[in-house]
Every structure is written in C-alpha cells, then in structure tokens.
Image: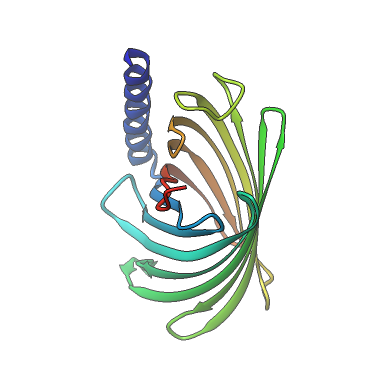
Length: 225
C-alpha cells in the first residue's frame, strides 16, 4: 500500500508542476474525464468532459461534453459507436472574448491490437458539426500506443507511457484542419481506472500551440458480468 500511495503522490505533485509550468509558459491546459462503461456484454456507454483553458486554469477556451452508445463487433474489440457532442467555445476575436456553441453528431470505429508490450489503438471518426452559422463535416484518424514500463502488462499499480498522433481533415476546402501529437506518462490505479499527464502539440494552418493535458479514465462496468 505504501508503494501505491507513494506513486500516486508523485503523480499528483507532477500534475501540480505541469499546471504551474503551463501558467508560467503561456501554455494551454486541458483537464479531461473519459468514461467507457459496459452496459451489457456487447454495449458500452461513452461519456467525457473536457475543460480546456488558454492558461493553466481560469481562462476558459472550450468546454466539451461528449456521450454515445457503442457496440463491440468482437469481444472487447472492434467497437462501433454513435455519439453526440456539445461544445462551448470562448475564443478571443480582436482581443475580445466571444462565445460560440456547436452541436456535433459523430460516428466512430475503434480497433485494438497487441504486440508484446505494445498496446496499439486505431480510431476512425466522422463528425457532422452544426455550428451557429455553418455546417461542416470532418474526418479524424488517431493512432495511439500505450506501453507499460514497470510491468509487462497494463496491470494495476503500473506506470506506462502513452503516445498518439491524430489528423483532422475537412470534407471541403481547406481540407487540412489540424494535427495533434501527444506524449504522456500514466498510472494504472486498478483494472478499471487510470490517470495520465502529458503534453500535446496542436498544429493548425496558421498556428502551432502546446497544451498540458491531465486525464482520468474510468471503465467501471454497469453490468454484473
């Protein structure tokens, strides 16, 4: 138990240091909760909240709430999902904060592969975006990798490294929207919960910005099986 508390304390201190670093270096900070909870043997409920800031905390850039129902085509893998997202954005326009609301419907397919220690995931997502004055469609592809460090598997009480790359493409011009590159360290709390802290660099057509990211993942099943 002492080792568990020590590791958790180290991660909490690291999270605080990352937030302070973001404040001093004018980086954005994203605080994220992801839930993927089994409803039955085949069905799962996806739910997430992302609180995104222009700085470490307090200057809201975007609040994103997503939910959806997924279905496993094979046991615990090859998941198709239909979801909805509500996005509140507060960008700066000519030095003044504006407010935009977007409603989003999305369809996605996730498939996982394992090669020794390497846990690979592919996510394909199609989005229909209902903006205040516009409608747009976008395709996203993400490839992610989790690698356990202190154990051979992603088992409770183990540290792991996480990386991903995700590209966003519009169905109209300009086709390229953005690309995200991410690296993090994580800790598996138990078989259903883990936490991550890392850095993501987002490249868009006219800007390039870094984000500190802190995420909590909850996979506690609702079904009894």
